[in-house]
Amino acid sequence: MKFFSRLFLYVSGALLVGVIAAVVLLDQHYVQALQQEEYARTQGIQQLVQQQIIEHSDRQQRLMQWQDKFGYRLSLLPLADLSLSQAKKQQLLQQGSYVRARSGWVVDDVTVFYFFPQCHCVLVAEKMYHNALAHQHYGNGLVLMVFLVLGLFVFLYVRNNQGYVRRLSAVYQAYGSGDFRQRVDERMPHPYDELAQRFNDMAERIETLMNEHQLMVNGVSHDLKTPLARLRFALDMTRECRSVADYQRQVQQMDQCLDDLTELLDDWLLLAKLNGQAYPVTLAQCALAPMVEQVSERLSPLTPSVQLTLKLDDSEAFVDASLFNRILENLISNGFKFARSQLRIALQANNQGFVLTVEDDGPGVPDADKTRILQPFVRLDDSRSSQGGGLGLAIVVNLLEKHGFDLQVLDSELGGVKFVVQGMAHGRYPST
Image 1 (spheres, rainbow, N blue to C red):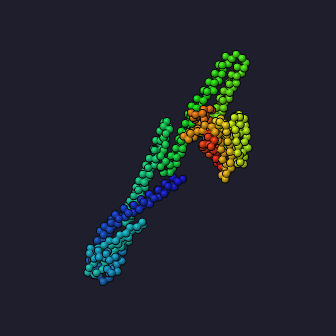
Image 2 (cartoon, rainbow, N blue to C red):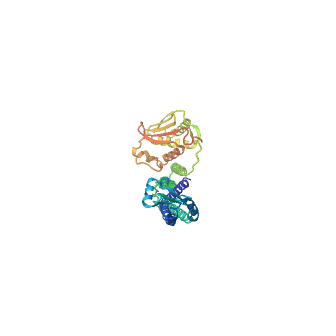
Image 3 (cartoon, rainbow, N blue to C red):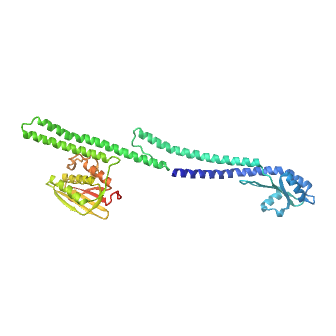
């Protein structure tokens, strides 16, 4: 709609400019042509008046008889009675004649003045019948000039828009040929700026999905090898078993490998679903403290050597209960996995929503890697990330984004790492 409104304004402006230019350029030439034409036509009348009327006692009556024949309104007036400026009167005295011509949209005003010294009077010949042919030429020239200006505008406007279309087409073609780094310069007028922005957003999204896909494929293919190799080794070891106890031990290791493999595939499938365009999120107002306490009590017995400290306030927020439970499981299990002896979990309500912190006394994370550990399949070289497939925190980040919550990775006073979840009471979807 903005495009057509602007085009209408441009065309209207071009039409107005064309009319003004035509009037300015044609009017002067038209007036000059009228002056020359009328001067030539009234020469005979001037000579006739000078010879037969100037000396006649009844001048005006004779002029009335002639004006219908010549097509001019004729009158003899004293020089002082003329409605001319002093400069025009002076020109009339010097040259003996003066032609006043004014053009208009509908009629022309043409008057010829002749000065007679013998009576110190002026013959005023005002044209009564206008030249239809001159009007036709003037109209044709006016229309032609308007269309020329309008056509020039349309040509320049279309050519300018073709330039923007060519720029967009060139980027589209290069992108379609496989150069996914191509982006469109958004400094273009509407609606091309919107097309450029939409294309850049799409290209960024596609590039992100392709990078995530490649990263996930590489990570899964790498992480699948470890449990599969352990499973193969345990299977081979069953052939060497000498007792039922040895056989049961190998079967138990095989079962653990299958559990690790199942967990990895579940995390991979969940992350793939979360990266899709639409993932169902059903929000409802939930009390967060019972959820944190329930997950902590379920995971705590799995690591009895780690002391768990809970400090929970009454906080409520609009969350998807199942997805938020997954967030808590990943964060708390990550804390238990890397904590040496202490794990501290705190939930605090504030004016805007809540703050959830999970901190441990583990090896910690260098500042340069605090962002990297939130990416899929990223594991650092130290003991902080030597375990697992590297998907847990990536899933947490994705689920928090779908709730409209934020995650920060900070240093803990205990010596390890501190994960801080900040969420608003209504999340990103207060109406849900």
